[in-house]
Length: 191
Length: 191
DNA sequence: CATCTAATTAGATATTAATCAAATTGGATG
DNA sequence: CATCCAATTTGATTAATATCTAATTAGATG
Image (cartoon, each protein chain N blue to C red):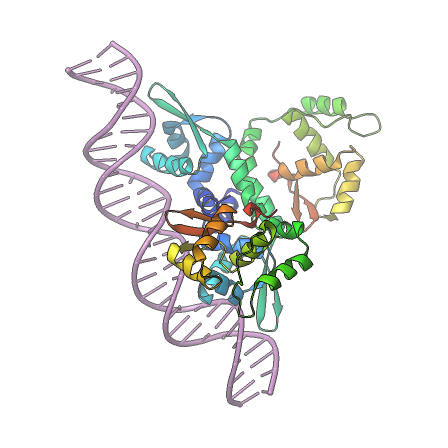
């Protein structure tokens, strides 16, 4: 994830009023005046804060007559909250380029003859080599459902949930609203 | 986790320079001048930012002669990053120990038509039901003075001091320096 | 068309905060 | 003791931002 996106996300949450709004919206959708009432603030102030939250993708809205119901985009909240945990690790990978020979050796080591994985490599470098190979089997630009992704991954290893999580964490794939998309290689934490 | 702690955490990360510092420290410990050099900033600026990061518990330090090596407290980073995800989520679990019917029965039993309490329930379970209902009339995240709290509680029962004490004891509210704040529902001692 | 209501924009004010130069602190060392 | 060096504090400047009132927009309804 881009550095500035992370900053803007945390800046959006670095305000008591906006945290209170998040807490409210986690209980369910609310319209502007209701939020203003519960927080003892004026509507323009709520608009101001909703704008900030919307700018970082945290807000979904649904209109009903004159009233706009705001709700939380939990996917964005989760992915942005976790982004900070894997920050410096991407930079470290830059130093860790792998030769083609090394790469081939790692792959032949972890793949069986029928194309499944013996196990998921514990060592970070090897895991990234294997993950990048797996993600190359997907079509770039295509949007996959969660079910499609799981089925694809299960062909490699029964623990497809771990594979899926690792693919997200290391920026090989991008998830939004339970839909999955391959990231462009320049975002991969690797190569 | 206390609401203000979450705000301070995100405020600490809502700055590009501090995010860059985090990214650096995730690769290993560094001393101040090294950070200043890598970011092309002056030492006082680094001190300023390290102070902010330290205030939210993100920094560990080790001294070697005149040089202080800063490193990241990953545990704090993870727990604070995840705190935002579970803010209001357990709000509904609270009622799990009591059925809605039971709850409604207790409330209608102790409330008069004009919204005041006939008396403060002696039985623990009933008292908790009533207290949780009272605290829901407060704004989550707002800081109240003792006077405001007392006035609010007096609308329910003349013995507002008992109500106030009970709200603290059972973790519905948090008090510090005569200032009161509603606790997040996951802290409520409901059954 | 006239009116209502919720949301937004505009503009003003007060507060917070990021950065640096200059001065200071405080341990380490000769 | 004198000196060095990294870190910190102080004080100033500049930029951002949280909140409000008043005015405006825009959809819905009679």
